[in-house]
Image 1: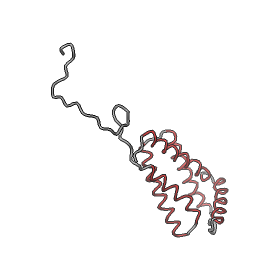
Image 2: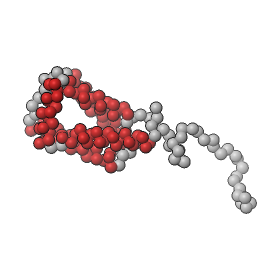
Image 3: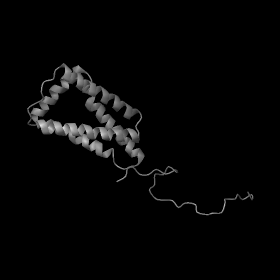
Image 4: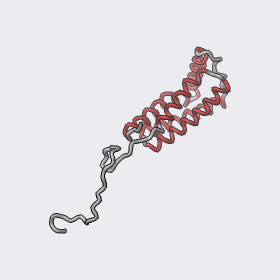
Length: 158
Protein backbone atom coordinates (compact mmCIF):
# COMPACT_ATOMS: atom_id res chain seq x y z
CA UNK A 1 0.00 0.00 0.00
CA UNK A 2 1.41 3.35 -1.06
CA UNK A 3 -0.14 6.62 -0.03
CA UNK A 4 -0.34 9.70 -2.19
CA UNK A 5 1.31 12.75 -0.68
CA UNK A 6 -2.04 14.57 -0.19
CA UNK A 7 -3.46 11.50 1.60
CA UNK A 8 -0.34 11.29 3.76
CA UNK A 9 -0.59 14.98 4.71
CA UNK A 10 -4.21 14.41 5.76
CA UNK A 11 -2.93 11.67 8.09
CA UNK A 12 -0.31 14.04 9.52
CA UNK A 13 -3.01 16.64 10.19
CA UNK A 14 -5.37 14.05 11.70
CA UNK A 15 -2.66 12.75 14.03
CA UNK A 16 -1.90 16.34 15.07
CA UNK A 17 -5.56 17.01 15.81
CA UNK A 18 -5.76 13.76 17.81
CA UNK A 19 -2.73 14.87 19.85
CA UNK A 20 -4.11 18.35 20.35
CA UNK A 21 -7.39 17.05 21.74
CA UNK A 22 -5.83 14.29 23.82
CA UNK A 23 -2.99 16.27 25.38
CA UNK A 24 -4.58 19.70 25.91
CA UNK A 25 -5.66 18.71 29.46
CA UNK A 26 -2.03 17.86 30.29
CA UNK A 27 -0.81 21.41 29.61
CA UNK A 28 -1.73 23.11 32.90
CA UNK A 29 -1.65 21.95 36.53
CA UNK A 30 -5.38 22.71 36.91
CA UNK A 31 -6.55 20.76 33.87
CA UNK A 32 -4.07 17.99 34.61
CA UNK A 33 -5.52 17.56 38.11
CA UNK A 34 -8.96 17.05 36.59
CA UNK A 35 -7.81 14.65 33.84
CA UNK A 36 -5.69 12.66 36.32
CA UNK A 37 -8.83 12.01 38.38
CA UNK A 38 -10.79 11.01 35.27
CA UNK A 39 -8.05 8.65 34.07
CA UNK A 40 -7.72 7.11 37.52
CA UNK A 41 -11.47 6.43 37.62
CA UNK A 42 -11.34 4.92 34.12
CA UNK A 43 -8.43 2.67 35.11
CA UNK A 44 -10.47 1.38 38.09
CA UNK A 45 -13.48 0.85 35.80
CA UNK A 46 -11.26 -1.27 33.53
CA UNK A 47 -10.16 -3.40 36.48
CA UNK A 48 -7.00 -1.58 37.50
CA UNK A 49 -6.10 -0.03 40.80
CA UNK A 50 -6.27 3.60 39.72
CA UNK A 51 -3.37 5.95 39.13
CA UNK A 52 -0.91 6.88 41.86
CA UNK A 53 -1.17 10.32 43.42
CA UNK A 54 0.95 13.00 41.80
CA UNK A 55 3.04 15.53 43.67
CA UNK A 56 4.11 18.94 42.35
CA UNK A 57 7.20 17.58 40.56
CA UNK A 58 5.18 14.86 38.79
CA UNK A 59 2.65 17.47 37.70
CA UNK A 60 5.47 19.73 36.45
CA UNK A 61 6.81 17.03 34.14
CA UNK A 62 3.32 16.05 32.95
CA UNK A 63 2.58 19.69 32.12
CA UNK A 64 5.94 20.17 30.38
CA UNK A 65 5.20 17.13 28.20
CA UNK A 66 1.67 18.35 27.53
CA UNK A 67 2.93 21.80 26.55
CA UNK A 68 5.56 20.43 24.16
CA UNK A 69 3.04 18.08 22.51
CA UNK A 70 0.58 20.97 22.09
CA UNK A 71 3.18 23.05 20.27
CA UNK A 72 4.27 20.04 18.18
CA UNK A 73 0.61 19.45 17.28
CA UNK A 74 0.09 23.08 16.26
CA UNK A 75 3.19 22.91 14.04
CA UNK A 76 1.93 19.80 12.23
CA UNK A 77 -1.54 21.30 11.82
CA UNK A 78 -0.19 24.58 10.44
CA UNK A 79 2.51 23.16 8.16
CA UNK A 80 2.07 19.43 7.64
CA UNK A 81 4.87 17.74 5.74
CA UNK A 82 6.23 14.29 5.04
CA UNK A 83 9.31 15.12 7.14
CA UNK A 84 7.25 16.12 10.19
CA UNK A 85 5.06 13.03 9.76
CA UNK A 86 8.09 10.75 9.72
CA UNK A 87 9.50 12.42 12.84
CA UNK A 88 6.12 12.10 14.52
CA UNK A 89 6.03 8.40 13.63
CA UNK A 90 9.38 7.85 15.36
CA UNK A 91 8.20 9.84 18.38
CA UNK A 92 5.10 7.67 18.61
CA UNK A 93 7.21 4.50 18.57
CA UNK A 94 9.28 5.93 21.42
CA UNK A 95 6.15 6.89 23.38
CA UNK A 96 4.74 3.41 22.72
CA UNK A 97 7.91 1.79 24.03
CA UNK A 98 7.70 3.73 27.31
CA UNK A 99 3.99 3.02 27.62
CA UNK A 100 4.62 -0.69 27.02
CA UNK A 101 7.36 -0.62 29.66
CA UNK A 102 4.95 0.99 32.13
CA UNK A 103 2.21 -1.48 31.19
CA UNK A 104 4.59 -4.37 31.89
CA UNK A 105 5.63 -2.80 35.21
CA UNK A 106 2.14 -1.89 36.44
CA UNK A 107 -0.41 -3.92 34.48
CA UNK A 108 -2.61 -0.79 34.37
CA UNK A 109 -5.33 -1.57 31.79
CA UNK A 110 -5.77 2.14 31.06
CA UNK A 111 -2.47 2.11 29.17
CA UNK A 112 -3.95 -0.06 26.41
CA UNK A 113 -6.15 2.93 25.48
CA UNK A 114 -2.98 4.93 24.80
CA UNK A 115 -0.44 2.42 23.49
CA UNK A 116 -2.64 0.98 20.73
CA UNK A 117 -3.44 4.34 19.07
CA UNK A 118 0.19 5.48 19.46
CA UNK A 119 1.44 2.38 17.68
CA UNK A 120 -1.21 2.74 14.97
CA UNK A 121 -0.32 6.40 14.30
CA UNK A 122 3.37 5.46 14.26
CA UNK A 123 2.82 2.72 11.68
CA UNK A 124 0.55 4.73 9.39
CA UNK A 125 3.00 7.65 9.36
CA UNK A 126 5.71 5.31 8.10
CA UNK A 127 3.71 3.80 5.24
CA UNK A 128 5.48 4.19 1.91
CA UNK A 129 4.47 7.04 -0.35
CA UNK A 130 3.64 6.83 -4.03
CA UNK A 131 6.36 8.35 -6.16
CA UNK A 132 5.57 11.83 -7.37
CA UNK A 133 6.30 12.66 -11.00
CA UNK A 134 7.35 15.89 -12.63
CA UNK A 135 3.93 16.22 -14.25
CA UNK A 136 2.31 16.10 -10.81
CA UNK A 137 0.24 13.06 -11.72
CA UNK A 138 1.56 10.89 -8.91
CA UNK A 139 1.16 7.95 -11.29
CA UNK A 140 3.29 4.92 -10.58
CA UNK A 141 3.32 4.02 -14.27
CA UNK A 142 6.77 4.52 -15.77
CA UNK A 143 7.01 6.79 -18.80
CA UNK A 144 9.24 5.98 -21.72
CA UNK A 145 12.27 8.22 -21.93
CA UNK A 146 13.04 10.11 -25.16
CA UNK A 147 15.66 7.91 -26.77
CA UNK A 148 16.52 9.57 -30.08
CA UNK A 149 20.21 10.37 -30.39
CA UNK A 150 19.46 13.01 -33.06
CA UNK A 151 19.34 16.58 -31.83
CA UNK A 152 15.92 18.22 -31.73
CA UNK A 153 15.30 20.62 -34.61
CA UNK A 154 12.56 23.14 -34.93
CA UNK A 155 10.24 23.26 -37.94
CA UNK A 156 12.05 26.46 -38.99
CA UNK A 157 15.29 24.59 -39.63
CA UNK A 158 16.93 25.42 -36.27
